[in-house]
Image (tube, rainbow, N blue to C red):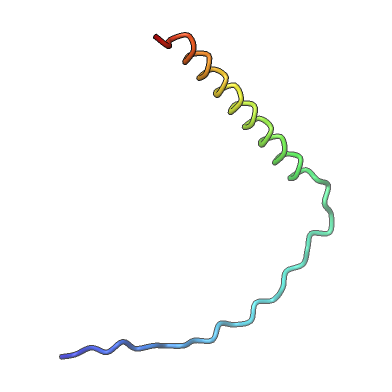
Length: 59
């Protein structure tokens, strides 16, 4: 028996647009910036420590 591919086209229901929040105190943005700053400092310190260790143990 030979099976042929069957294509089914279904129409998706229209999605109603959502309303933007009415108040925006910037808390989410400041938290994101704080997390980004901490991650950048961790990356900087880790890079510094790796380079110092590379210089100390370079035989």
